[in-house]
Amino acid sequence: MLSKINYLIVAAFAAVICYLSWDLYLINSGDFNRAIVPFLNGVKAFTKNIPLIHPMRETFEPISAYGYKSSYSFIIYVYACLISLFTNTFDARILGSIFKVAYVFSLYVLFSNFVNKKGFAYTALFILASLLLVSSSNLAFFNSFYQEQVLLVCLPLICAYVPRSDNKALITIAIAMVIAASSKSQFFYLPLIVLSAYALFNRERILIKVASCSLALALSIACVMGSSGATVFNKYHANYFGVFEYAKNNGLELPDGVDDSCVGIDAWGNKFNITLGSERTKIAMDCYNRNSEYGFKDVLTWVAKNPSFLFKIPYDAGVTNQLTEDYFHVYKVLRLLVNDDGPLSYLTKAKDYLFERVKFTVLLITMIISLLLLKHRHSGVFFFISSFGISQMYVAFLGEGYRDLDKHLFGMNLSFDLVVFLLISLSAIKLHHLVKMQISQR
Image (cartoon, rainbow, N blue to C red; front, side, top):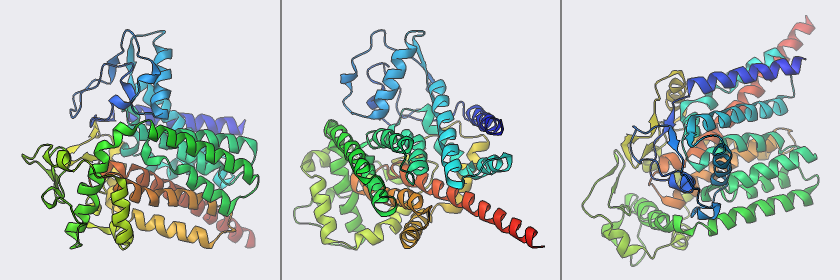
């Protein structure tokens, strides 16, 4: 009975979150078609005046029509097929609310497994500890069509079950891994992080774990290979809007043959500007057309010759000026969050004020401590989430450089939120235990 009441409290909390974020969303920065093209006629890009109720196509294209292969796309395609039996409209707020409820309960599963305590007081602690995680900067993804939103549900579930080896844990992690890693090319390697956590902290049934992680990795790589068209511009940006621009700003030598006049110019002719994000030029696509042969191999070759980059890039001025969770696209004046004026917006502002410049450092310290405390029962969880967050800094930058880096660091931001959530929960439990001991000794 007590357990059911706690679930009802959590459900009520989820309902409040859905109500407060009902009209909250992120504008389309040009990526929505990756997810909706077979069943919707499109959503206007770069405008805040879009409806959240969309008319669906009379005839859906087959699921094979997706040019960008993503687990998220397949999930919402199946959802669209189901609701098309009853309606010809797609209300993003309803689907967003379903995801929000799943998100809140995934956090509660993580909390319950982590503290291993039940009761009204602990449910109240869960709500308090999870406030950073229900900021507008996180919830806005759910009413939009960005693939990375699946991390919000999948990462807490992986954290909840990575210390365990029972069938339920293995199945849950396998499903969450496949969905998260296959949602976007930026997350393809997540199964390797899970496997590392298993190898270091929980080797029970290790052969099954290796098999599930290998399968998830294979599926994620297959999605990346099947979406190669989406990386055409990314390769150029990773070089000319990424490592070459970093080198130029830091007085490092550029490789032979680099078109110096195009360093810091994106594929559409926008020039990188630390203060403004970018500024317009009349170059258009000339630089991209002249230098489109560059690939990720060139990026890795440059990094191998300049290893100090790995230590300096998290604190580079061009990066630290893009660490806000009030997300923007290319230009800092092009803010993505819409209807961000309710109570949840204050949580986003508070996170930016308190943590904007320290997230990477906190994640790094957390990972180091988890490795030093290999035998601690919570170390595996902290290692998994902190190492994933740290890696996202490098994957995001090496994947597209400074361009749109702000939103590309969503994975790192979410990882940081989860670390704080777990630390608050753990600290409160420890404090409660100390108080009980003091009282019992009197």
